[in-house]
Each structure stands twice: as structure tokens, then as C-alpha cells.
Image 1 (spheres, chains in turn green, orange):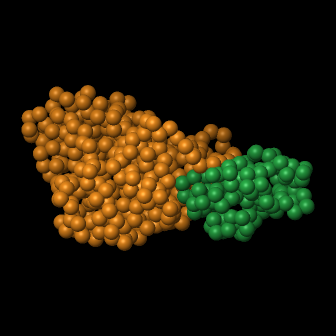
Image 2 (cartoon, helix red, strand yellow):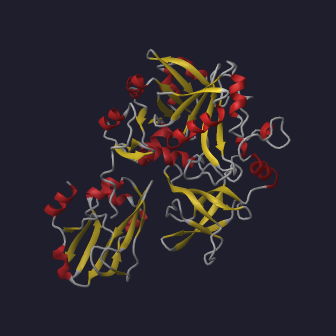
Image 3 (cartoon, rainbow over the protein chains, first blue to last red):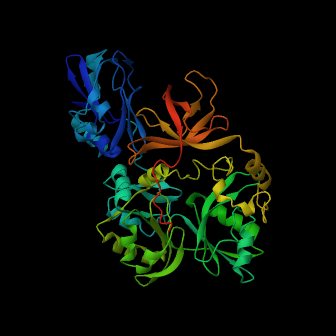
Length: 119
Length: 385
């Protein structure tokens, strides 16, 4: 599993990355009331807004961690955004993307580096 | 993800007497109106909001300004008439032991601040917004110094709100049970001279308690001894007031917005309106009087997004999905934890401001349907009788 400094996580399976927000991000956001996910087929550019997670008070962008195309989204979190706070690294995943260049995955932070980042 | 703010310039920020208590309760502290204030506690905005509607929430609002007006003549009626030069509100008719909502207006009819004015027997007590308190004090001094002694009080202010607020406060001050909405009284609380009003900013029954700064912690802790009472942050204070349809100064009210546009004409009693015995005589009275008679170009309305996506402050409002010119904008918006759906308030053209009308709000490049709805979103539970 890899992490971005904007508090997204990625898990890689072949050239498909599953993307979500970290436990740290989830705890900072608190109870989520709305999630806006990208559409399947959407081409994402690293650093662009891919999804939006909203709490009572604020809307936060979730950025695309790498370049790629959205191939699936997690309808369960759209229906019930609290799934994210319950299990941000598992059932609370947001979308899957086919990476343009899977090798870029290795350029992201590992867990130790991310833990240092949020410390 | 857009990260939460981790640091801010603390150098210029004030702390209320309850700051250490907030930290002790693991509050998330944010800068607000020049103060380091608790935006939420570990329970979070959603649960804090629901707790307030179900039991009792305790809010530190010590950042707000507390200002007294004593008439130089010694007769409070003179202070009341003097204050009427700055607000379009019937202050002279305010009875001892009562308070009412008021607005400072500017020369162009816009709102400089909204406030509470309490009749304290021999003087008036004004509760004003934190961000405006220095300007308000200067405004009062500039216009009322010939008639009044203006004094800023160094006191804490605690709001206790919710259906169990009366029971919780009555443990310390039995007399509060007989107070009605908008009553004000002096009371001894744990040996400290306090001023209690039955009012608040949540739509619930409740109280605001002005305490000496050095007794605020002791009184707060005594209230928190009641298991029904929980500390509530500014985040839930905002969602509670929005559900209650109450305006936030700086968002829903500002110097470019008149009381008529803001749908606050109920705060302008007939005696101050055109034809009334003390009509006009306040800044902007010409434009406000004219709008009272023939209407304003735009009005504040309640807005209910049809979908699940919250529509936040700043979103432009359009008459249709394709219209190119906005007919208004959202000034407050978010999710209402009690109504369990997104809610908002905003301003729209007078011709559009009809309950039931469906507009479109632009959110992240998309036009989302949003319906004009009556305020408040949640019924008020004031103790009027």
C-alpha cells in the first residue's frame, strides 16, 4: 500500500489501483454526509480533483494520486458515506483506476514515510 | 485530500477563560474572529448537533462582546432613545427584564451587526458579534457618548441550549424555570453575580449566562456534572443555527444587505416604521423605510437541495439549468443533521423569491436543483408561555 501527502491511499493489483482516503483523513473529516465519486471512464490527471467527500461543515477534494482511467467506483460509499469512516482502508475504498504507468506507483510514499508525514 | 489546517498564527489570537477546559476535553481549536475557539470535540459536529437537540449543549461564546449603556441622565429611557438613533428597533418600548433582537444599520441601509439588547432595569446590555465588537464599540462611542456611558464588560458567556437545558441550569439556579423566552435576570450562580437570558442561537429552548471571567470554569464544570450536558463546538453551533433559519453575521448579513432584504422586518416594530410614532431616525432609514413600503430588490430565502449533495456558501443560483446569468447566491449551506438532508440559505431576486420555486445551484460545474422553502428547517422550541 502506498500513500500521498494529500492523505490518499492506493493498493495495486496488476495495473489497477484501488484508491481511498487514509484513517488520518477520515478522523480529521469526522462523520461524512456525502461523497461525489468520479464516473467510470473518466481520465484522471495526477493532482486533479477526482472525488469530493463532505462532512456537515466542509467539502474536501480527493485528488488523483497518479494518471489513469477510472474503471469502477464504490457505490456502497455513495449510498452510505459513513462506510468510509467505519473502514477507510477497506470497505470504504472510493474508486479503482487503470494506471497509465504502473511503475509510477513506486514513486509514492510507503507506510513508514506517510506515518512520518502525519506525525 | 485537501488537508485540514494544521497551524495558524497564534500570536495575535485571544483565548477565552474556558480555553484550557476545551483543550482538556480534546477540542479541535481553530482561529475564529480573533480567538482560538473549539470548532468540535471528539464526538464530532454531527453528534454534537444531535445531542443539543436531544439533551443539552454547552457552548463557549465568551468571544462575543458585552457592552453596557448607562444614560448620563441616570434615566434608562434616555439610553434607550439614544440607542434608537443606531437601530431600527423599538428600544424605548423594551420592558425591564426583557431583551430583543436588534440591528446596527449603516447609512446605505446595510447591516453593520446584529445584536441582542437587554433591559437591565437601570441600563441596557448589548451582546454583539465577536468579529464586530471593536467596531460596534467605536460606533456607539462616536454616536452616543453625549448621552451614554459606554462600557465593555470583561465577562465570559456560556450558552446552554436544548430540551434539558432548563433542568440542568435549575440545579444551580432554581429561578430560571419560571423565565420565558427573551427574559433576562440577575442571578447568583455558585456565588458569582451572573446575568441570565432565556435565549440562544439553536432554535431550542435555552439560556445564555454571562459570568465573571474567573468563575466561568467553575460554573461550566458544575453544568457539565449533569450527564445531559455536553460541550458543543462552533461547528455544530453553525449547523444548529442554519437549521433554525437564523442568520450568521458576515455570511447571511453584511453592510451591503438591508434588514428588508434579509427578511428581518419582524425586528423592526411598527413604531419605527414609516407612519409610526418614532419612525426613522436611524442610519439608512430612508432606504429601509422605502423598502418596507414597496419591497426590496432581493430577499433571503431558505433553500432545500433536491439531491444529496450539500450546496455551500458562495454557490451561484440560476433560474434554469442553462441560464447564463445568476439570479442569486447561497450565503450559508451544509448538511442538517436533524433533518438528515442538505439545507441552505441565500439571496434571490424579488421576482424569484417564491416558496416552492425550483432553482439551480452551481456546484463543481454542475447545476443541481434546489427548492425555495420556508424557514426554519426545524421547528423552534422556545418557551414562550
